[in-house]
Amino acid sequence: MLSRKQTPHVPENQQCDTYAWFSQRAWVEIDLGALSHNVHQLRNFLSPHTELMAVVKADAYGHGSVTVAQTVLQSGASWLGVATVPEGIQLREAGIKAPILILGATHTLEQIHAIAHWKLQPTLSSPKQALIFSDTLEAIKFTSPIPVHIKLDTGMSRLGTNWQQAGEFVQLVQRLPHLEIKSIYSHLATADSLDPEVMMQQHQRFSEAIAQIKALGIEPPCLHLANSAATLAAPGLHYDMVRVGLAIYGLSPALHLRSRLDLKPVLQLKARVTHIKTIAAGTGVSYGHQFIAPHEMRLAVVGIGYADGVPRNLSGKMQALIQGRRVPQIGAITMDQLMLDVSTLPNIQEGEIVTLLGEEAKEEISADDWAKQLNTISWEILCGFKHRLPRVGVI
Image (cartoon, rainbow, N blue to C red; front, side):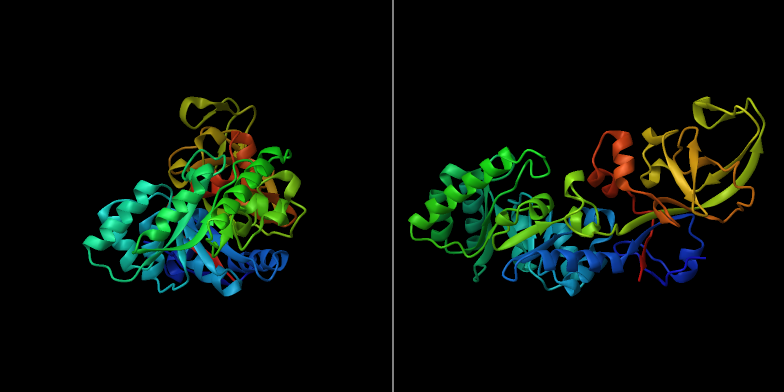
């Protein structure tokens, strides 16, 4: 039995009730109290005039975008950032009225029509894209100008107009009748690095671009540059708004930034023991018999696998928590199941809850631990949990 009050919900496209949750073989647990705590920590770290945009793209990094958006807005965030038009529409359909910035590229007739209809705010990265927006809005006879955000490339080499052409780009957009400039921004490539040289070079380029724009008599209404790492590392880069993703979910973008704020991980991954068995010495376990029992062992089969987002490359490299104790995973992780060595825990029973990511007693396994084993980043781990895992809110 869990000690915290459970509020079951499945935010996007699933049905869930209390009975269904208790019968689940595996689920993602979302601590809404920790989420609110993180937003408060960030809000208090920022100056009063700096707004907080919560980045909720990719299903809020796997946490459930609608519930996360509702919680962060109640806790002090004032903007939301998404990657795609459908992500923005999903939030609008849930009744969310806060401004939503689409961080990704948009240019088709269908996208522009939806942006106007749902009152979303697009990123403009080139003069060509700006002209397409203006011409399309004219063709569909959309009478009100839509707010747009000008993106400059200062060194990420992804979306955005080259910072050296900032002045002429902004002048063009300002002349187009159906567009209203809401902000000018850029994105940092190395803000999580111990060496700040590239970040400061990008900051200098951004400053020079803004100076170009102001020299033309144009006063940008809002400037933003900092992601999670820059928000924690460099208060001088906060400007009028910061765009925070990973830190909202309680993880630090870099080891050297962990002490900056008291952040609490929001996501826990849990599953149930579905079967207990004892195997003899010399018995192979799972596909390919990558593990051979060196002695008699007691195994727990757990109802979760790589189809749920537990990477198969963690086979034989990960641990899990049962009754507050670490136990090793053995054999190949399969599509829907994995095996744990519970030989040291004779009282484990079928139905027992297993924590794969999260905290139990004084032990903790984090997305950072998995990322280190896989030579990847915690962002990828969080975004990998599939929708057949219900998101269960914990208050």
